[in-house]
Image 1: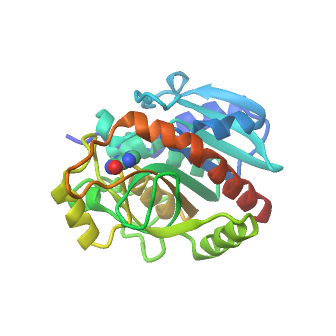
Image 2: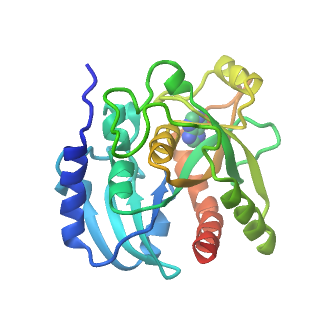
Image 3: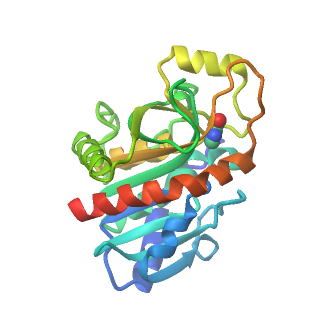
Length: 278
Ligand code: HPA
């Protein structure tokens, strides 16, 4: 039985955070596997561990710290999820997306989502960064949409539009920032699976046929919830490994974390540039 999150539960967390901070964050940032380093650049940070918050899931994955960092980056008040929650950890979709609901209630109007992903597009190599231009909601297609259950009418409509999950203007800005910094920025469609097992060669051939360029175990539910509340979204995938369509190599969590070291500075450049531009 799904355990749906109510507005009262969201606001209980929101109020607790509100009491501990003196700035009003306007941009939310979710850091993916191996990409936590960016949170260390936040100025005047207030750290709030997820374990201090009621109704809140705790990130159990190695490489994910599990706290909010609220402070300033490029002069913009931001709230950063240092460590995200994944569906495969055993939480409900409501719990997985609770942090985004809370960000929205705190006044966040834009969400920058990052993740580690496998490269399905054959031109991608580990260390690449991909601008997410659209997403394949494979979890939702199998009945795991985070908006299932009573609709939170105060936040958004029952049947929200999803024609532009990733903000086109933000995509344009990200392309320009990459160009200014002589950085190769890949683009494409992110397919969200539940994990935690990596894909089989047949899964990957299916994903390629379906038009996916990258595959991962997060992001899609958070973006749906963000769009439900009218937030503008930018998505960046760090390509940590190549999809193995013939089964000749093995994908490991260690290589995902390792690739994060190459990817983090690129994502930092893009995020800083975005913050300066909005
Ligand atoms: N598949 C799914 N999720 C991932 C991968 C992958 O190959 N790499 C990093 N996250």
